[in-house]
Image 1 (tube, rainbow, N blue to C red):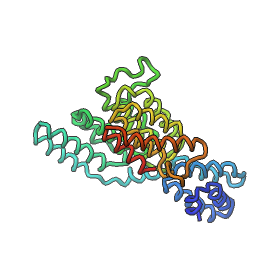
Image 2 (cartoon, rainbow, N blue to C red):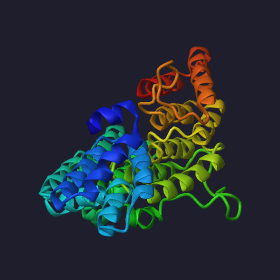
Image 3 (cartoon, rainbow, N blue to C red):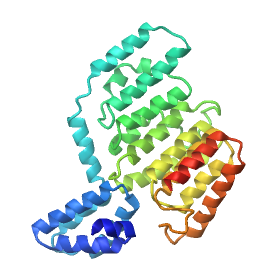
Image 4 (cartoon, rainbow, N blue to C red):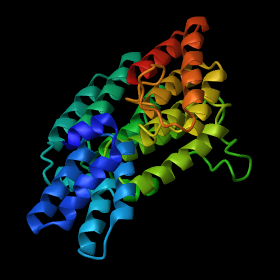
Length: 339
């Protein structure tokens, strides 16, 4: 029944069922908690937030702990905390694999090919320790990691977001050495040259991966990070690499929100006609509008800003036909597919 209501977009009906269960016996309440976990696991964060808002108004003085626990499950990031704790405690990744891989690559010597192999090793490390928060290998071999340059440096920094996926409490502290200067301070982050910013852009993408990779992460923390990333997105038009990372980060942290203001900011990045930044902006718009059916007569867009978003999607399609940049065409195509 809950799944049917969710497919129909009836948050009030879902909240009514959950409210009835929470007011019932202990067994009914446990069923209600399980349904909340299932709802969060479906990945529809916007719908889970709507249900939580309705439940908040239905809360009674009886069993106050049940209502607070439901709010924690739906929007407080409880399921994300459980997943992070499980992956950290049950990680059996063999560090020796990375040690041998690093040694093997070093024996091959230098050359253009070694840059590609180095990048693949960093990616291997990210997948090996994904979500475990265990980055001890990188910390022990920091000089080895720093060998990455240009887009390999972007990927290497972003890989921290894969390793620390869901570790939202320490996200800013972990990435502080790589984050670009605050646009509100001094010269607005002008220390990064227009041709640089690979580590900075990668760190913004990593922030998005940490907060957006788990459907059950804290809604409050996700919004804080989205605002932080949007600030850098608006200030980074002069540097396409930082724009690229910021756009992807905004898409991940605002996934499924369908907020018109965010879509417009990403559209501004597309309007700069930068192939690198435009590709990320196209994908990010798709992430913000994911599953809404935007551009189709049958859609689940919120009534506020619906017409503007429909018009914007039409503009995206026309822009994809007119632009000469294949990366932008690819980004918009992926974005439209996500919608």
